[in-house]
Length: 117
Image (tube, rainbow, N blue to C red; front, side):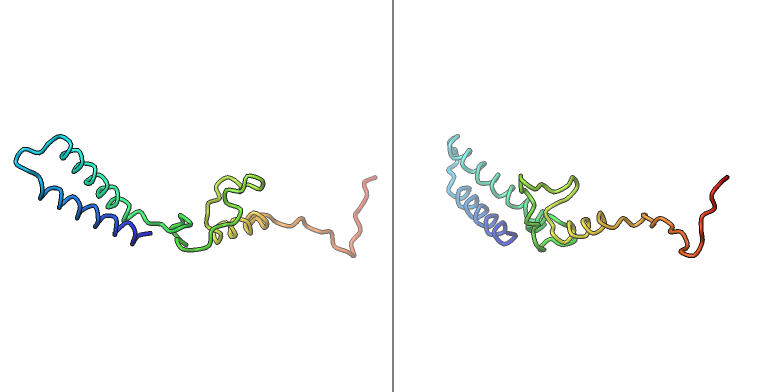
């Protein structure tokens, strides 16, 4: 997608240059509006060049796999989950095995509990 944005920027700048070169000493309002539109397209394309994050939108795995459950209305992802399958898998594993959970102490098998009288 970065290459497509760069190609769009180059095309818009070339068109803007050609339009500016063809302007007469007293351009019409239509000519000026056309040039402004093409320059806005170039500005939009230039602004999107650095914003490329890949299909996942993830800073760690920009070109990783997209979670197949992302956007599924029947089985929505929990809040805070994004498109990245790798990050979502890590979240699922953390949710399944909480780090701070401690197992309940089991009584020693050979000790009997004392009953209060």
